[in-house]
Length: 575
Image (cartoon, rainbow, N blue to C red; front, side):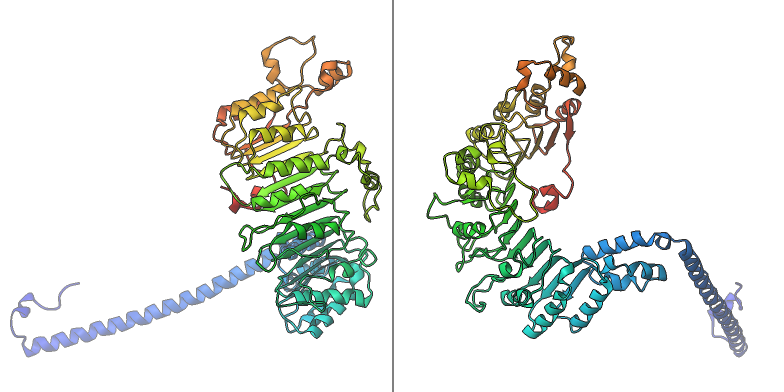
């Protein structure tokens, strides 16, 4: 842009003519700027209009794609199943929300199965009306009921439970969650009073807190209404009960016919410390248990109270699975349990002690010895154990004398020791007591190569052992694992060429079967082959060892599926 004046004009005082010319030029440029601003405004308005048109086209495209979207083309049955999974995962308002998305989703959401998870928040102002509407949408389908109460008037709780009891025949599961022990009892007391039956009810869950200044009518500080509310006459199909509270109950409060029981406590206060006597009293009232899970607190306000009478024990004749999860000293409770049909034992400590826990081995060995059917042989209770009153919906059980091919041995098939370590002599004694053991899981164990050699075949201890899982076993070498697997490989027939490579070759089951049928006396008592080896974070198991194990059998270096792997379910507990 050229300058309007000669540069000489800036070297002195301007003349009147130069001042007039300057004002004229300024005015002309201002008019040009105004014109430019007007043009910019016009262009911006045009851009805004174009953006509006663009958004309209995007909306039209979105609408058109909605015709062919997968969400609309999914069959109603599959869509309803997806909605049901969302509700089961905790999205309680899911059916109402998805009904407002589109006509296809609204149609799928009308399926009764989508509404079968009835979630009742008693603190909601419209809890009764919403529950009535929800029950209406379920039609005649099964119900999974959850009742949550913080602190509500008794009349309100009674109204809600009375409405739910009108549909008790359709209950499949029932969960009651409340921070008030009194309110839980208010809900439970109404069930026998209404004289309704829940023939399809299979699972009950109670989650509450015990406050020692809060009692029920008879002064008790426990959920006393459970046994009456879910008696065999009221809930004949009930098999599973989960009880979550801050303390362990002191009285036998559970229905006697349940088969699967979970007790989880979070505290051991001075008013009611965790005591073996209370646990035995509770378990004595549920003789038909098939699985038992005890989860106890790690931090005690008062230490675990041992039983004054060491000879006292509770017999659980049908128990097949026992899980103890808590501080190390809780495992001493095994000393007082007898379970002649035990097949799966999981001992999980919350404490990483860093050394061998000496009291556990005697308790575990005594449990195995006193649970063996042979230990009942000279006792009058053996006949009663062979023919007790069977639990409802339970399959008939074999006599105790036929539980194990070994004479009177405990029929344990799976042993898991999580963060529980034993001395070599304790491992040896336990292995000798478990001829039927099929799976061994050790986590944070100092088991040595020498101890592992006790399992070497073909006539080693635990001859039926086929699966091993070792994690964070810092004293175990990969070579010892390879030798264990090789020692249990089936021996080939005499007509087979003796090549060392055959020992790690592919095993032919047909050949082995024919060899065993041929009457080889040496093979009759041979140990089973190791079908799977899991090794995770064992510092002396090297890559070459893993490759060698993979040639011999199935070798796994990852955790099992989420539904059965304890480390995957509780990842924060991993070291």
